[in-house]
Length: 103
Image (cartoon, rainbow, N blue to C red):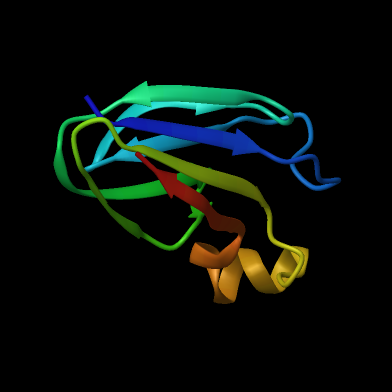
């Protein structure tokens, strides 16, 4: 099965709170700061998003193949201010970077 490996980088904002990991509309776990989660997923396309309250990340589209590892890094976005980000661009509160894809 493909593996989704998620690393939450250290950041000042949201340091004491966890992010919900939402895969295809279903909460599959939570991740705290400096934590790494590994989740087995099925082959094929998936939609991945991270949430905290009403804020979160943009939807990340991943397509996984058998034996593949998809590595993702999440953190509080540096680009959003507290009030502006919460109210005007809530889906940019969490930054998501695809680290690599390896077989």
